[in-house]
Image 1 (spheres, rainbow, N blue to C red):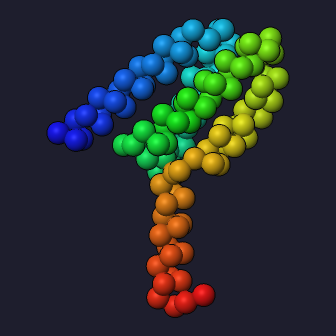
Image 2 (cartoon, rainbow, N blue to C red; image 1 turned 90 degrees about the vertical axis):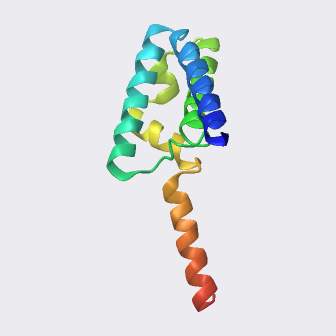
Length: 118
C-alpha cells in the first residue's frame, strides 16, 4: 500500500510539473523538454538518478521549472538563463541532487573507512 501511495504522489508531482512546463513560453518549454530528454538519456546510460523516488527526478524538474519561471519573470531569454552550453547547465542541476551515484559513493567510502579505518 505504501508503494502505491508513493507512486500516486510521484504521479501527481509529475503532472503538476507538466502543467507548469506547458505554461512556459515556447522557447523555455522547448529547452525544458530537451533537458528532460538529456537527463533521461543520461540516466539510461549511467543510472545516475533514482526515478523511483521523488527526491531526484521530481526535485530536478521543480528546480529547473523554478529557474525558468524566474527567467521569464525577469524577461530574460532562455539562453540568458542557461547559457549556450545547455548540457553544462543541465549537469550543474544534477550536481547537488541526491542521485544513486552519490549514495553509492557514500556507501563505498563509509564501508571502507569502517573496515579499514581513517
